[in-house]
Image (cartoon, rainbow, N blue to C red; front, side, top):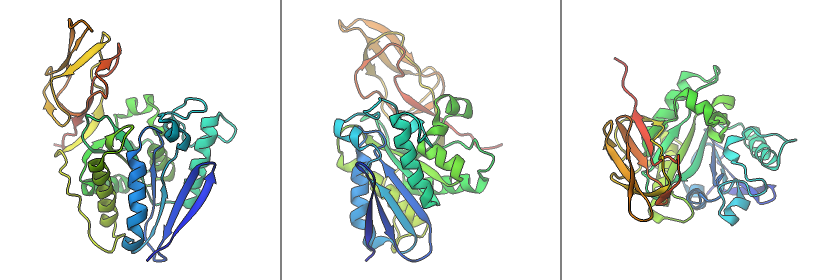
Length: 316
């Protein structure tokens, strides 16, 4: 049985290193960079229990929580200064508290020289499980790496979603996310798993995400037995798009469910005042797949009422 070594990197920031001694991929698995997204934490705990007897080659480094203070306070952002850690990579050793924390994380990962990175996240309670593939914005990233990302995603059992098209990808600073930075700076396959709800543990979601990770590891020949996720994804390959926003604050009553395919101009839901007066209809601007709906019924003015994905059309 392989042994796990634990290393404290920074106050509360811990990594676990599992090494087989047999040449193979070096995989980094990270979780909980958003403190209120705790499903990934449970997935890492499950993997720490299972991998010592399953891993046959290569190495795995697991980070249960990249934002332990945020986890304790159930905050998405870094509590010390309120910034989103996942828009600050590779960080700055002389910058803000968040930038210094991110720099510590990135230095630890970069020094390990990984071949693969899986970053574990969650979405709304009203969402389907999906895996995100980042955009290539660096000329040093080979097409082989992108093909490997898609190959691994197909083995995850999750619905495959490429990130926003490049202009929106840059506008939302996703090239400064952990997975975006790993892809475009290190040139390695990097995937973001979005499985389960924020703020609480859901057993089914933990199982789906754990199976996805093991299935992708199996596809790279890292395990001593074959794994295939039992979860059924929505067929096709998609990319994230911008859902319609509200023009009024109020109660959003959805007319569709996560996982539904919708047509252009199809009704997604309606917004009502607190007295029950209909304020507006929310309709899709394009044919799409509904990835998620809002976690709360009360929506703000100019809030998106859904995360939608557009289908990637095959080349003619």
